[in-house]
Length: 99
Image (cartoon, rainbow, N blue to C red; front, side, top):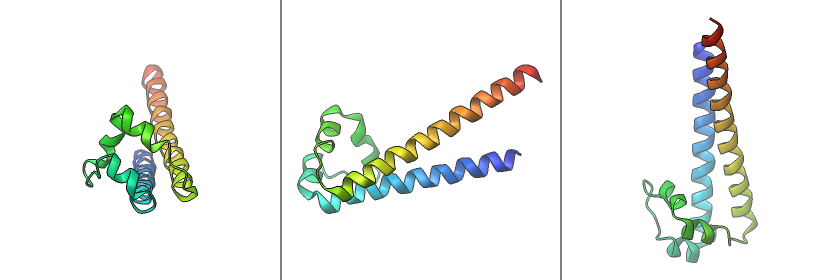
């Protein structure tokens, strides 16, 4: 059972990371002006773009349908991953409370 939980966690993590990277690359490719405005982050600095409110507001101004679709898919992948973690943690709390 533990191997199954770890496999699902790893699968959702990979799904989330791939969705996030595809979104970032779409912004870089389809909105180069915006990419320069947010500082043209490198691979390791890309996730930290979302920690700055000003940069997040700039990303919300995108009108390209490809980028918007990938943004929705990225958000969906994040919700799946966080939802799974919450579900597993709640199940673990209940299990150890009654075990």
